[in-house]
Length: 238
Ligand code: 6PG
Image (tube, rainbow, N blue to C red):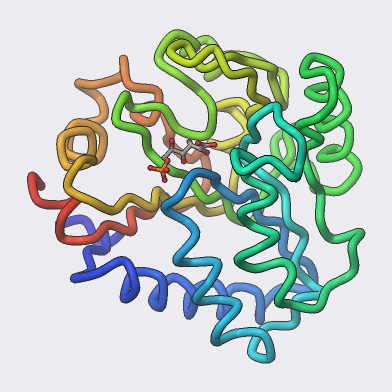
């Protein structure tokens, strides 16, 4: 099996392995720009970093961005920023200027423009697009990643950096990085756990070229490594 596909007996062991990789990567850089995923899967990773790496990583090197955000206030239980703040940011020491929050409370179209400019002002260009050091990606059962949903495959063919979108089922407004920015990262990984994701993992991880209708299948880094951090449940159909 492809060595970039890493399968762990539990989410805890997955998180420990990624935390070690992350610490090693940051160690070799003066500044590390990471775009975080949202939803529930990354919580265990953020908690593991906060529990075991507060002193093992020079957090002043790390600049946190988000791959997507729900258009809700930062206090909302739906906010990806709030989840990250509670599980990680409140437990590590870094300048507030290192935290590049998507302002979910703002008007979505204006915020997509503002956030694009914040990224351009802080993330170096590679091939004329912002080049993150790492992008964390979740995977929805419908094959979405970040907030690129199946009705918006066009977001893999736009020169825009961010876009204001809507969840096609809940109609919740969101801000998302676009596909070309995801694919421009030096490294990225899907983080997927749980039995409910085994179907979509089989489609996207095993045979992406035959499943391009699922947005996540279109993640294909131009000059970087794409990893899969899976647990045995989500990987059960591989
Ligand atoms: C979000 C995400 C989204 C998420 C997937 C998986 O804001 O919801 O960024 O892409 O990663 O929906 O979500 P779970 O980890 O909760 O299954």
